[in-house]
Amino acid sequence: MEQTLRSIVENSRRLVFFGGAGVSTESGIPDFRSESGLYQTKHRYGYSPEEIISYSFFRREPETFYDFYKKNMIYTGAKPNPAHKTLALWEKQGILSAIITQNIDGLHQDAGSEKVFELHGSVRRNYCMDCHAFYPLEYIMDEENCRRGVPVCSKCGGMVKPDVVLYEEGLDGSVIDGAMKAISEADVMIVGGTSLVVYPAAGLAHGFRGDKLILINKGATSLDGRADLVVSRPIGEVLGELADLVPLYGIISG
Ligand code: ZN
Image (cartoon, rainbow, N blue to C red; front, side, top):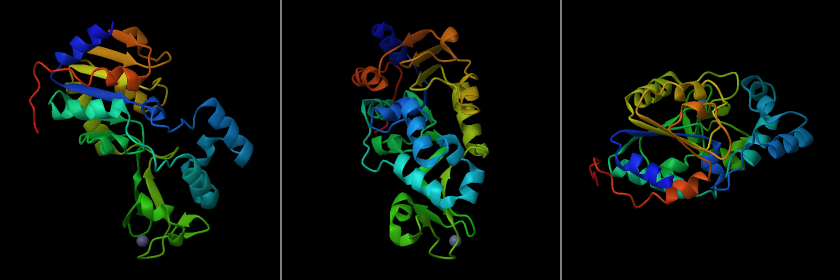
């Protein structure tokens, strides 16, 4: 079965990868939507993760929001795993045209990927809600820049918000457009580490009209019926085994 996956990727000219939380869990970043994440959050805060990371909650109780956010959504020690590394290599080899991710951790960029559409934003970017000055992750994690855990703009004193799409917020139009274009032009799409249940992001994946659709996920997904190949193994393991392939149509671009 993996031989088939190998030959599909080797023959691809314009592959896109669509990834979800499962790509990051293998780097030690737990999915806060998992059973245990949900239980622990309810127990500790009295709210579900979805309630806490909603825009109205952020405005109402920024201190609680940031307490949860910094403890559960920021993993500064996390490193790219073989899935991130193989995808970065494929981009350099000229066969991967884009990564579309639901993750906000920036690990694809750490691995060297450049064309990354971050549907839900990134913890690496933060901005002042008043003057729109941008700040790196290190700034908001430094308590010197915070009042009771809430980061404050050094220029105007406004509240700093992560450039992450919270519940109740819409996705960035230019990111959606870029992702849709990449998917519509792709000959192969690999969907990995996501059960494709989070909309509207998942709706994008359903727009694929290319040649081969491959799903790599430990559980069932909403696209299983349409897939040419379903691989039910950990994504890092599967993509890690393909780090040595030689693309037939790729161009080494340095
Ligand atoms: Zn400001």
